[in-house]
Length: 286
Ligand SMILES: [Zn+2]
Ligand SMILES: [Zn+2]
Image 1 (tube, helix red, strand yellow):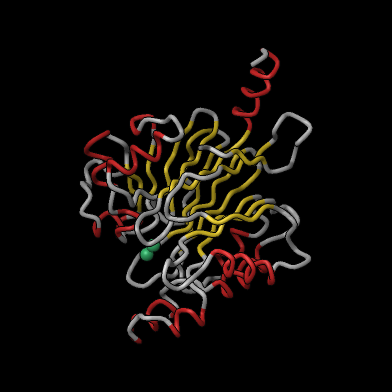
Image 2: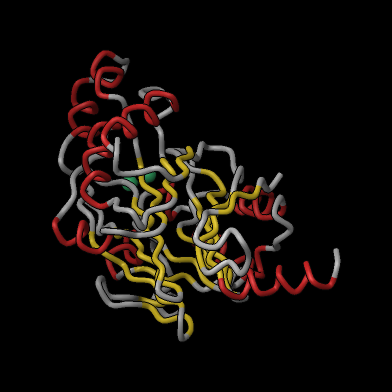
């Protein structure tokens, strides 16, 4: 690599924010956020071995992770927090109810309050915003970096005006599209489970995700990742086409799907110092 390219690379690294899903679905979730030497995980729903393997595909060791922020206590999001804390000493950040439900050591866990921004540096802050999800004090995270924002939201049966106002116009949005309505209702799950999944405290259908996105996406939004697709009650092409139907004329950026076995791609937002300024850069990471 020429020194000029190296310099450009350094500038890019210094000024941009990268989002990589290490995998997403009911068997485990974790998302890596990188900028300016910060490496932060949102959720750790994998075993220690799986986390190590998935980070390894990006040439990152677990002890290079500065913090793990947990959305809520369900096993596919917080089930691997304890092992990451014990094995590699990674600090875990979550709210009080999530910490108690996960039986985390309250002496070492860093508790946050919903709607109070966590400042990781002068220009990197992460805001936890409450979202409705049965029996859990679940939060979305809005990551602000140099005036641009990425939103990560998953596991919600409905949405609030507060969430809409925080997500409106984010440059990047990762959001669950859990099930296709007719596949769920015609599928194998017992009636009670179908009702729980589709209820206000359950998960978003592809159609609901499309409707929600239509109220938060604007011309600033450059990339969307659909996450947490049900392997039984959804299909990537159904999720993508249903969501795009609702975003017709609103969104012309990049849309991708994060499946259970990642990492597969990285989105970067920020003031990338080259001709691609203000455009999303995609890197295939393996
Ligand atoms: Zn989940
Ligand atoms: Zn959940």
